Length: 168
Image (cartoon, rainbow, N blue to C red; front, side):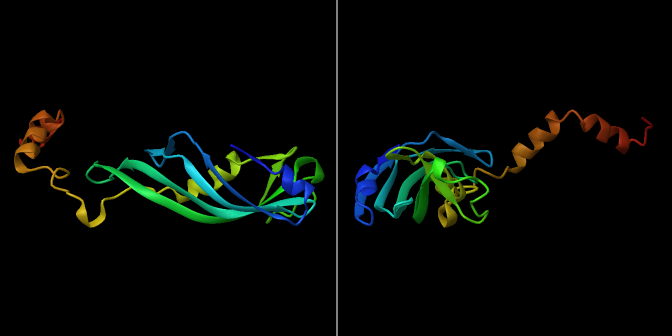
């Protein structure tokens, strides 16, 4: 998603409001696939002449399954951000301090894709969980299910051999 900053580039120091929505594909994290609603960005931006300063809030809903009972779940992700964008050709990698987190733009638009992913990915949960309301009754096996597993296990033959003290 592109943010048009032409007015800020013309009027250095003036603050502009923005609100836009960014769509990202489903994300696979730690073996879990999360569907992500469109991400809403709201905030302000301004130009210092050499940089565009962008700050505001990011909010979305993440949909997945409970890591225990596998019921569908949703979780709200919200964070504040403050990022600096610089013109690609104005900075050489040697000039940029390793601790500085800069995003680059070209022309009069800022592509928010990279910033979106850098903000979103660390906020995705390792596992979603129903917490206190999670029904674990279908997670554990009862005695009948355990006995069926023993009958189906191909290594039961080895167990019988060991019980009869026979050599293998």
